[in-house]
Length: 343
Image (cartoon, rainbow, N blue to C red; front, top):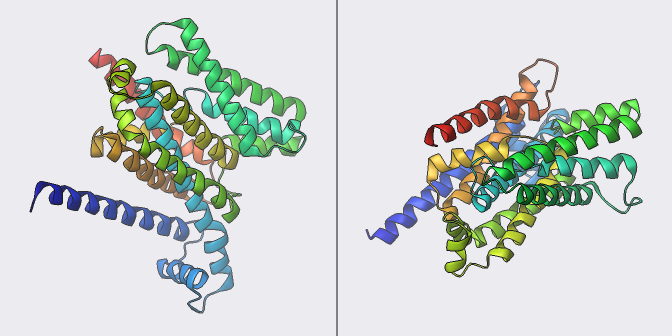
């Protein structure tokens, strides 16, 4: 067997294993909940809905699986994949292991934009939540970038500016909710801001899946450029990479993916930070492999986090952002400690 054939076989096996893991995670996401449903019922429900298999099933079980749990699991997978991709792109472009949409204020800006549309009616009804979130995400990143440039204190400036920008936009969101929302709106918005998958349906899959897939394809198209950025912008430019265009395209794609997911499920922290590091430990630093690995790892992680959020407290569903923070905060501390040890 030649080296090329062995490499192709190994890569194909890895892709197959990843797809199997994702299917199992989606299967478990549809089966596990406050009321457990057997795995075979899940499979028969999918067969009935997709291929009109005609299996006799309880309408209640079939409705729970198809209309509630499976759509929720698919949206969770898309959200995890998009945030994982955004984390890889931002960490590579900025050459900082702590960069992610949450820490850089992109997620907070997207939340402010979405809340402005939902509560203040910005856009006069012409803007949707994802569009408002996208505008807020771009505004937040622009402000953070400007502040980092003015600070000019090395690679950590963007992170410090992101923390400041995140606090600013979180404060603006809280001010809007407190000032303009009624009690019912305030309760719903605050729960949504912590990450809420309870209300997602197949219509949300129609928004999240194309964005996550398109984001993955665009990032893979620029995988070579991201590899070049590992050695700095000057090295990337010397290799013929159009630095400014790549920055604009990939930052825009990251902001779009983050904004769409925030518009659907709210602000979910630490996924974009933790998932890229976990994927690097599994597959290395070559972006041609790292990008799909991060997307797949993020998808599985979010489905598992959603399952935990539904069963950890009997009779109550926790915001998924609580679960991701419980995992992400210790991981963030470990990354900070490792950076200090290497310094």
